[in-house]
Length: 24
Image (cartoon, rainbow, N blue to C red; front, side, top):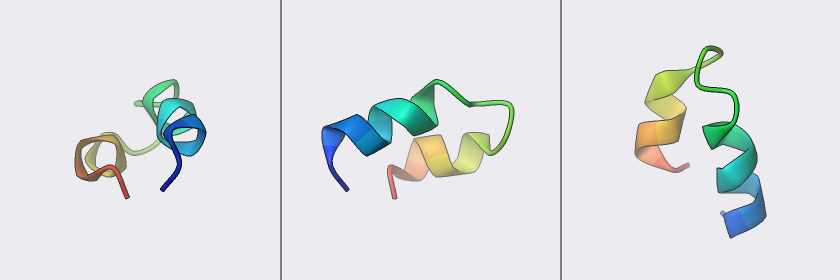
């Protein structure tokens, strides 16, 4: 994924922390 998308996921760790770790 693009860094912008990964950054968006990082800003929402309460929704799915596993996704942030995977970076997918």
